[in-house]
Image 1 (cartoon, rainbow, N blue to C red):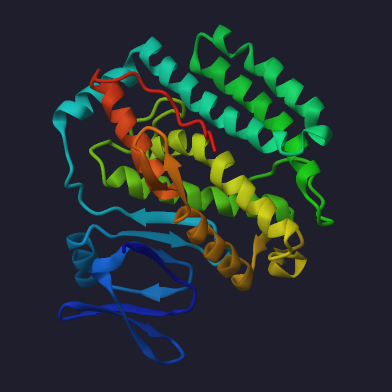
Image 2: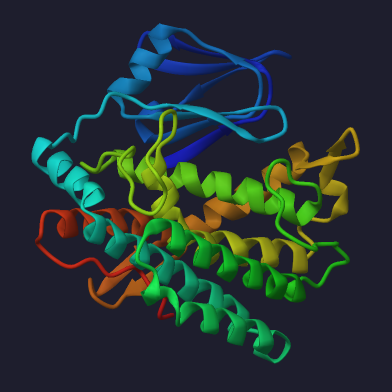
Length: 328
């Protein structure tokens, strides 16, 4: 079974013949089953060379790099093999056509809002005011005639959502508002780390389709970023990341001792905190649900791939895109 592999310690990745080894700085050498690895996530200081990168490319392994604090630094994205000029032309045309782009942007927000409300409704006696506020903003989404207006409404929805989100937290964690650059408290640190893992998971699934990850619809395409992963992640962050964070905190799997501070301002997960989060993250992605359309079990990770396929069908005018809205 394909899986992700995570490296937290300092060392070196090297290829010897047809095997990849991780050589730890403190000693010891571990072979990595490259034919079973989907993504490599590097959190430590790791040396490597082009010989290794070429070998990773042969097996379509994406390499994601994070700095010491767990903040995303970049991705080695192997040469695309599932290329389609026909799809790229249509994907670009849906971006450049105002109303085609607006339709897709609306759908991404609709999927994300559905899952935000789903989380809040699990404790609706405490969050009823927040739910009403979100639904009031949601009812006005159809009046948005451009992306800027739509993003403004989406920002309002998220502001209300995070006000309700803090009511779902059982531990004594202070959380007044969402702060990203940088996160300044444990909840924001968890949200930033979880969202980063979500973006890279979505990116790795996009890579395994014919979609171009730089052509997006809700978020503006830009240089130096795979903006389509930001679009699709809008649907899955409140479905996967947020409930996972609440579970880890409320079950005390992650506590205040799993966070460190940089100069008293930047809060981040320490190594043990990241390991605990990632163990739970991998378990969640492998969780299966019975897909009511496919009539078979599907993992959360594969639901992301299915979302990519649905988007492909839409941009080639095969089937109108409808975002995933959890029914279970």
